[in-house]
Image (cartoon, rainbow, N blue to C red; front, side, top):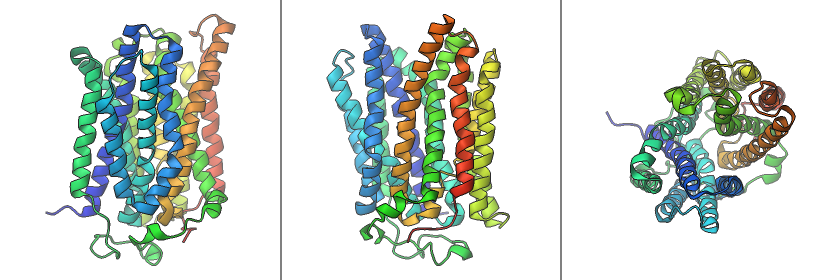
Length: 429
């Protein structure tokens, strides 16, 4: 049976996010091994590792604008080719700091165009009753990619060396680009031929038109909209919690709990696998609630966002109370899993409120998410330095309480903001 084109588009965007996160994890693994072998100091390592996020933050809104003007399909292909080519040509010499900074900046800028482009493409192709699970499946590729990268790439480094990771990533990027070039298309000007069957309540307002990029972008209305800012605040919180756990949880295991990551085996991958699972559960549940008319779109988004963020908040706050690897893995898995569940609320909401400008709104909110990662990771390091000076080491639970309390508090705050100001209705023509 022939696969509907919109399903193929969703599958390809899922693979897209998976490959992107394999690249991100892969660079960290390969560069850390090479830098440690060359005796590079921690300050220089931090500069190289953080450069990506500065480029990534700067290109989010331009990425949404470009996708709006020339089409998400084209922008997605060009950005993938740029970062893949950069990986293929980059020599991994830890002592050539300027070259590495420029390369990581280019990769960050290129990947910054990807998620706004994806949202533009999905808004054109996916009917309202399939949005939740389509976006959830697409974004769950991030978590599966992170898990696969951390599980498989250390072995590649061990047997083939750090440089082999870059070549493998470039090959993956080039392969995806060929698939996208061959199979991805723009939708026709009418819903017929796309295979969609929209909800009756939205039939008049959710027609998809490839001429949309020529529309004037209502920047002022977007940037002053309370529902948009509800999305922005929740995106900030989600990525603050995610990046703090991604970057500092290994340190908590090693210095806070005195555990060896190597001895933990595959259990350290559980938080990311849990995100992959719960992200897709959230999407399926959301579409079920909407299509069966159990809840309205607005109530569905608010319910899943609130449930996900409040449970994650509780799990984050109690992490320091568990002094075993099993307890810490369980709490972090619950926290990240329910944060991913919450993405069926705020992350899909871009296409509810502004299907025509989904890439623009995604660019704005993802800029906040990227800045949250930069701020959160840096602030956590300063908090731990202060705790180390006060407590002599980081093995005390008290040294870590503030680290996990901050994202826990942000989750509660953000969930109330979303409850008060979000909507599932279209607010931009």
